[in-house]
Length: 202
Image 1 (cartoon, rainbow, N blue to C red):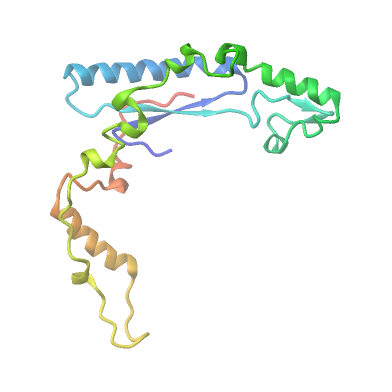
Image 2: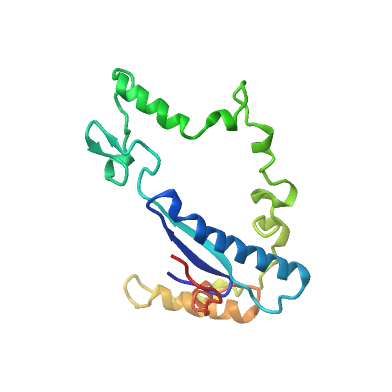
């Protein structure tokens, strides 16, 4: 998996819930340390953030076997595991057990509204995804000094009279664009090749 100087993958391959807390906690501690260093000004260079990739079986937590057919971890988990719940009492019992396993009585009150404890987990202000200055392009955008695309146009006197490669023409335009504003136009392909400053956990 590709890495760069700003993040590194933490792979968590879990076949059961007991297998993923340890590497998840490791990633959380690394993230907290990076955040503290940034806040204190001690961070003099890029510190990679962990990107957690949790790989679980298909249909994890659903009824593992229905009508003698394996569901969890198979293609059947993409379908409706209990398709006969309206007519089959066994399916209804399994469906209720499955849904109650998520403990909805701890998440919602008697009116069906989320509990205050659950709502308190929601971020507020600039910590909301839509209001984050990094994600909201209207707050951090700067005009780029882009070259005029007409200067790179390919002259075509007759259809089929000249041969050109679109990627090469675009490449010349991009080279001028990068040269026009160093440090402002991100080159993703180059950043993806930077050495990672973290380690992988599996």
